[in-house]
Image (tube, rainbow, N blue to C red; front, side, top):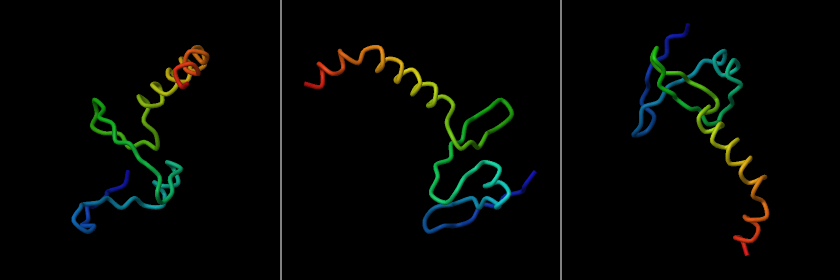
Length: 74
């Protein structure tokens, strides 16, 4: 477990992640991180599982309805 400290960054407050945490999450400067509420508190993830599920559903619909979407684009 790592203890993190909130720090002032301009007019905002930020969190500095240690290199070990960045490596474990496979994150680099500029990447997007998602904070998700869980029954145990919050989870910090390099992706949003709900968004990933929605994108999978959207891709399936776009593949199935490709002709309809093509006609709508005209």
